Image (cartoon, rainbow, N blue to C red; front, side, top):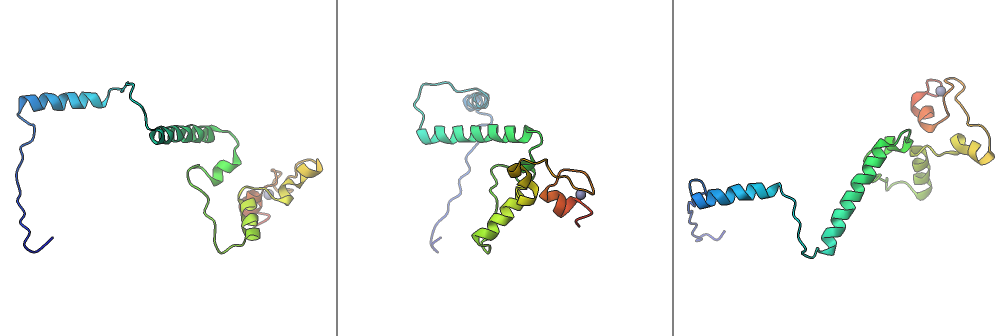
Length: 140
Ligand SMILES: [Zn+2]
């Protein structure tokens, strides 16, 4: 603000106590809960944003209600993108991603070979990266 700027404060009375303004305020509050139906054109970008938000919510709901989805553990919120470590090269990042999603040769080779799924000999549960790295006492 410039040193010689003059500031004037003016008190403006609210609508309280003024009958016409009280009625307008009451109607405005009622209008907040009403659905709007009109034939005015909708701006494409507004519609696209609304549609995307709605679809993201549907997708998240489907994602949250899926049963036995191991990927839900590593990415519960679909809007949150995985964070990549810029210090890793492509090959290293691939290894980290495969570990995160539990897709490794040791746990999935049986699918390629048409064999039975391997089980941990100590726990007798399906062989998985998380099991090897976190859960199984035999591997820790
Ligand atoms: Zn085990």
